Each structure stands twice: as C-alpha cells, then as structure tokens.
Image (cartoon, rainbow, N blue to C red; front, side, top):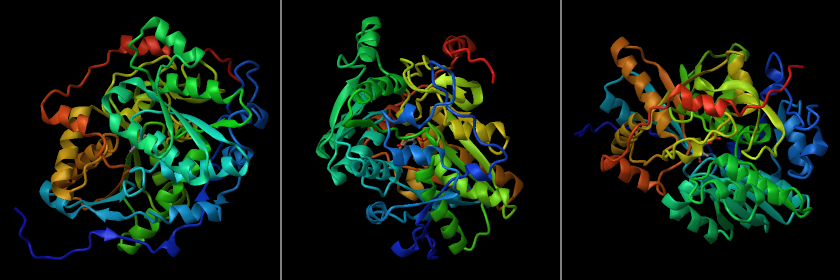
Length: 461
Ligand SMILES: *Cc1c(COP(=O)(O)O)cnc(C)c1O
C-alpha cells in the first residue's frame, strides 16, 4: 500500500513545436562505416539499382546517406504531431516497489495509433512511396505491430497495403489482423499458397508456424516484379533505424528537462534493432563526443539470441534467399525460433548497423528468457499501470535487474528504457503467463548449429 501524499512529476512532456525536425544518422560519427550489402549473385556491393525494385529512391538515398542529419518532411512532421512528442515517464512507483535508489525512466511509444514505435517509420515510408507514385506496399509482420502501423500509414496516403503475417501469430492473435483490416489493409497467413516461397514451405509442413524470414520472402516476391508495388520493411535497415531516432532525440530533451545530466544505463529490447537503435543512437552521439558515458545494453529473447549466440557474417534477410546479403549477427536465415510470445523479437538476424556497432564494442547485449520478462511485466503493470507489449518486457526485466543491483550497492543510477509498445492485443501472452502455462525452452547448441550451417560462405574481401 502506498498512501504517501507526496505529489511528484511522473511525465516529462514536450510541446509539439519542441519536437525535433531532423532524424540523426549515426554512421558518419562511427570510426568506420558498416560493411555494404552484397548482391547475392555477383557478391559485389549492392547499388541503388539493386534496391530499386523494392524501395523508392528517397528511401534508398537515406539508406546510404553520409549526412549526419536528414530533414523530416513537413507532411511527416504533421502526422507525427498526432501522438508525438511521446511522453517520458519516471517510474516512481516501480522504483518504490523495488526499494531501489535507482531512477528509472521509460520513453513510452504505446501512445501512437498502432500502439508501438512502428508508425515512426511506417509514416515516412508510406509518404516517400506515395510521393514516388507507388500504388501498393507489401510487407511481413510478426505479432502484427508492423502490419498495423503500415496499414495505418497507407490509409493516410491512399496506398493499398498487403501484409503476410507469421502463421503462429496469425493463429494466436486475431485482434491485430482485424485492426489491419479496419485500416483497410489486406492480410494473409504466412506461409501462404500465393507465392512460390510460401508454397515451398507448405510442401514440407502444411501447418508450418511461419517465421519473419518466410513472410519477408513472400512480400518481396510479390513486390519485386510489379512496377506499381514496393516493399516496406519495419526494422533492420539503416533508413528504418534513422526514422526511429526521433525517440532518442526527444528523450535527450526530456531527460534534460527532468534535471538529469545523462543515463548511466540505457537498455532496450532488440528484434531487428529499430526501437533500440532509435533510442540509443542520439545518446551514442553524445557519448562519442565525450558529453556523457552511458552503458548501452541490448536485450534479446533467449529463444532468438542473434547478438549473443549468433555469428557475425553475411547472410540473407529472408528464408528463400531473395534479399541482398547483409553482414549482420545472424542465427542463419533458415533458423525457425520457438513461437515465443514476443513475436516482434523472432527474427534470425540483427540490423547490420547495430551489429557493426556491437562489433566495435560500443554496446553490450544480454539474452533473457520469457518467464523472467513476464514476471517483470506484471510487476511493472501493477505499479505503473501500463500493460507492456511482450517485446519490451525484455527491457523492463533488464531494467529491474539493474535497479535491484542498485539496491545492493546503494548506487543512484539513472536507467533509461523504451517502453516501445502496449500489450492490449497481446493478452493471450498474459493468459499463458498468468495461468502458469508459459515455459522457457532451453535451446541447445546443436539446434543453433543447424541454423548457423545455412549461413552462406562468402569469401572475405
Ligand atoms: C516490432 C517490435 C519490436 C521489435 O523490433 P525492433 O526493430 O527491434 O524494435 C519490439 N517491440 C515492439 C513493441 C514492436 O512492435
């Protein structure tokens, strides 16, 4: 019971006109750029022409830009203002429940129309495609957050939206599918019989649970040959992480407003790396400039640990091997993770940019099994009142670990994390946890070895 009458500041907000008007590109500030994507046939660096069947030129230019800042177009700023700047919360009640001297802040992206950080990139991606005269976007989605965000963005700019959803999530989570349909999108269970990639997988197992890698193959296969259709990716690529830096830029302003010099620990969940990159890159800029020194820590699920148990190698972004080869931390493009509840973290690879930064030793990574994450989520919900999506429960669990360490040491650390989405459509996951049915799968090295064996051998240099 907390009947304390003290009235404290919980939300640190910014006015709409305080919202940053540029995205931040971290690449020029790194000691070396990330290795280029390679054309899978020639093994030469992939050029703009290789990406042109999939993405409009404005996005391809952002993918390879050497500018430190990219202006956010007015038409995007105007849409962002519907929910941005998003609030930064101080987790006073969670801190008190943990008995920690640490100060915990979370940047809450669940206030967007889709309920996660995904519209931060869905909106500019739809905007640039519409500007280029594209009529339809195809994409994959895991838990459905990305599909929801893209369907929302397509509705705003008059584009058709066609989504392949990972089968396991499609079966478990009907509500996001309905939300995608409410926004006017069309959705298929992946693997589907609409594509050669899907049919090949169905031939091996008609009840295949699917994976993000398979769903990407299907969406790419449909977009590539059709001049009026392009493909949109919700994570992994440089331009996606670029768009998400609005999160970190706002958080920097908000922490300063809260009177904090800097976080001691910045922690976030990583599926393909976009919410984590988005929160952390502006802080990495400050760190590289010597203005602060936060520890930057990624948290991945123990069932899909591309940073902590994968290899750093060139691999395909999809299962069928249709994308350019990207140098990244990967579990192998054939790896099918267990159907854990954090559907958005079930991707075999990690953003090449984030993988490169990890290799440079500028950030660390840990993996946490889902039971600890949901225990943390329930603690969070019962104090802060927000029900987290399954993905950021990983970040919350890591923040709680650190806060409990601070209770031992007495250190008043400042912990910053991204609560990158709410879990209102993920109640099946909470059902599984609260009823005691959720389990942690122990993944053997042998099982990882099978996936890693599918990483193609690419000669160095
Ligand atoms: C998609 C998603 C993720 C995983 O993607 P990242 O690119 O790693 O951010 C995490 N959390 C939520 C809420 C998501 O929707």
